[in-house]
Length: 209
Image (tube, rainbow, N blue to C red; front, side, top):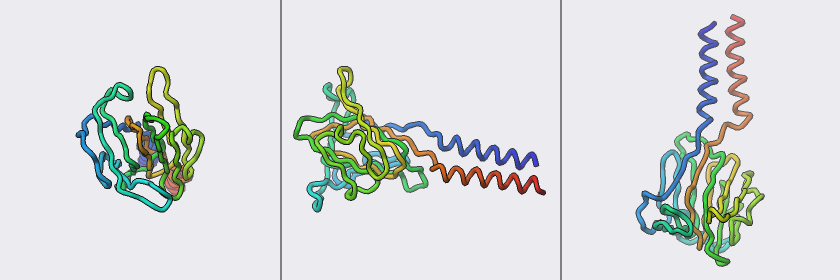
């Protein structure tokens, strides 16, 4: 009886630890200063950041490219990404959990800047503007978007997308992007409840016997 209880306890502790992952970070300091073509994988380690098809009109897509630049004192002390147009951050298909939160820093050039953002499905809920700040307080397929503006200390703004999702499409033209972080999502409340109920059922059967 004690062994069964101990096993269930260890299982629950392991489940809790496994869902409490710290944020991962993507920077571009080790990337060659080259143009990345559509379909290029930029980063992979349980997730993939890749160049995605660019948006031109609601019915037209074109090949996308991206550039990694040397540090620019206006924006970053390290290398950074200049998209043209969209990139996709995708949770790995190798049983890796979905994202719970993604953040990235950006710097918009001027009024000619165009930015895009969409969660999970690219074309069905694509947000378009000349600054990510326009999306502050909005949602995309159930995920909430918040934007922290630049200030006198940091000449970059920060986008935070929070929810439960497996893909984030973002990018634009005439912008710089850097310091992409992502947290893995905890199980949905219903899923964790099922784990707990199953564990209690195991204990009940042991007690009955």
